[in-house]
Length: 424
Image (cartoon, rainbow, N blue to C red; front, side, top):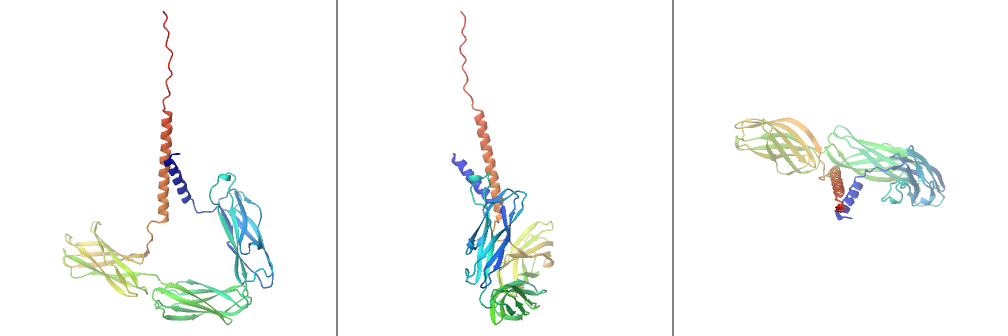
C-alpha cells in the first residue's frame, strides 16, 4: 500500500475516534445504593436497578461485580438483551452478607458493572472498547458507640443577603445521638476571628442524617474570601471541618476619569481613579482606553502601566494621549479595566477644547466579565479537526476519481488486419 494512503487512513481513524460523541449507549441507575449492616445480624436484601438503552438499538450486555465484597452479591447471569423498543429494563441483584464476615467499621464498596457487548454485525471485526457503566453498592458497618461524620454546604451571600451554612450530621455509630449542634467560627482574610454562630440542637437517630443551619449576615463585611471552621458537638464528642467561602464578587470600580493641565497639541494625561472593593490585594491591574473620532473611527488605543492594588483601597492609573493634529470636539471613548481574568468597562465622552478636556462618564457596559483562560478551547480544536477530516476525504475522493479516469483512458493495442490479396 502506498505510504501516503496509509498515513491518510491512520489520520482518518484518529480524527474519527476523537470526534466520537461522549454519549454511552448503555446506562445504569441508581448510581449508588447504601445498606447498613447492623451489629450481630446478617444482611440479606434484593436491590433493584435499571439498565437504560440510550440509543434505542439492539443492545447486549453482561452484568458482573467487583470490589471487596463482590462474592456476597449475586447478579443476573448470562447475556442481557434489549430491543430498540426497550428504553429501560428493570433488574435486581441479591446481597447476602453473613454475620462476622465484615468486622471493620466504615464504608465497604461493591461495584455492579454493566458491560455492553459488540453486536452480531460487528462480530470479531470490532476493534475498541465498549461502554461499561457502574452502580455502586455501599455497605456501611456502624462504628461502636456514638460516631458521626459531618459535611457542609454553603450558600454564599453578599452585602444584602446572608450566607447560610447547611451542616449535615450523619450518624455512623451503633447508638442514636440525642443532642447535636454546630458552632461556626468565621475568620477574615488575615485570619482574624470575626464572629461565632451557634446552630439549633437536633437528635440524630441510628443510621440517619439530620441538618443544622447557621446564618451570617454582616452588612459591614467587605466583599472577598472568608474562612469558616465548623465544629459539631454531639453527646460529649466533636467532629470538625473547615470551608472557604466568598461574600459578594471580586470587582474594581472605575470611579472617575479626569485630565489636568492640558493644552491642545500636547500630551493629555488621563487619571483613571479606581476602587478595589475586594478584601485582598489584586495584582496586575491595568487600563485600556479606546478613543474614537466624531466619525467613530478608532484614532487612539492607550494602555496604562500594570499595578497592584491593596485590599479595600483606591488607586490611580494613567494613560497618555498625544493630541498633535487633533481638533477640538467631542470624542466617544471607552475604558476597559483588566484584573484577575475579569474586566470592567466604562463609556465616556471626552470634550476637547484648546486648554481643557472635560470627561463625562456614561456608565458601565459590562462589569466583572469573566474571561476564558487557556487560549484555544476544546470546541475550537474539534472544529479544526473536522476541517482536517473534510480536507482529507476530499483529497482522497479526487485521487480515486482521477485514478479511475486514467484507467478508463488506457488505449488498447490496435488489431492488425490481414493484407488483402489482389487477384491477378
